Length: 431
Image 1 (cartoon, rainbow, N blue to C red):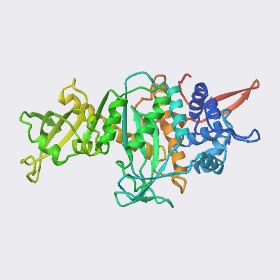
Image 2: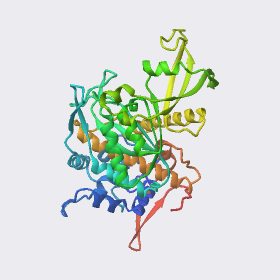
Image 3: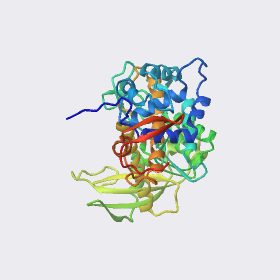
Image 4: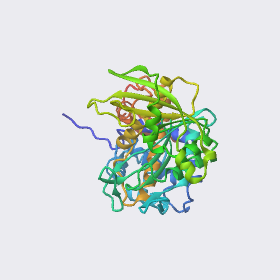
């Protein structure tokens, strides 16, 4: 077998089409104007730093060191951006970190470490506006927390008894709109009202309309429901079972039978006013409102009797101010927020959230936000390219996109004082 070598041929020829779209969107100008100015003597501008960093994930890498080990020789001849070293990228990320904030809960003694970075959250929202996020449509905001297991020097034990972080994430559709990092000892319920206040503040600055809000039981709090009812038209939150709630559910007489997979269940609704005792203690009874409670019950396998309802069922309830849809439509719409778990899987396994590069909470926050931007860019690219290239679909994960599009042998050649991209393969793609 005869070997022919050519150092000019890159195995990642498809990346050039991706970066060309970045240029069309004007991302270089957005980065250089929004991020802190760099010295004119700097060899690498913010465009070079971020394009190189995002190229890691568009080429199948999983850590920043891939820039120097696996990518630099293949990308250094491209005309779109310069390739910095991994250390330069890490240094620039450190410069963007903001010292973490320390909080204590009103009735707690634990110290909560939060990493806030409003500058990068604002940049992410501006980027999304360039990526055709419709600010005025009736957007649905999903909010949740996830655990990133890691043994960094400042990470603390989570409720799952393993060290890590617990970032808060806001998602519209499949677009990441907000990231706020918190240490592992701060659960999803801790100081969530303050986090949501900051989230809506950032959205309001960009005039992004939020019509509907969905969240799990960690958001079932008096102050949060009051906040959400003011900031949105509709909300759907899982109600946390309590003695008072169980007693109200026990009064339901008219249950409708439904099928959940291969399991028989029953569903009903009641009017319910939550947090009466809390409002009385705070002398805020004027904030009490009547909401709709959609309840689903499934028979317990162990036949254990509930002390409040006097039957052997597991109950789940959704509290909402939507009085128009049927109880089945309400339950179905709420359970669509399960797609947020898929987004966490994508972020962790496709965009580096399982491989945090720094030893400090606030520096890893910068990393989380820039990889979230990369996720948003990928969604825009795959949806755009799938309209032109028949072998792509908008639902592809990035690994399949890399195999089918990025891994195209190509090289840049200079002809008539112009650079042209020569593709090796029968690729019919128009830009």
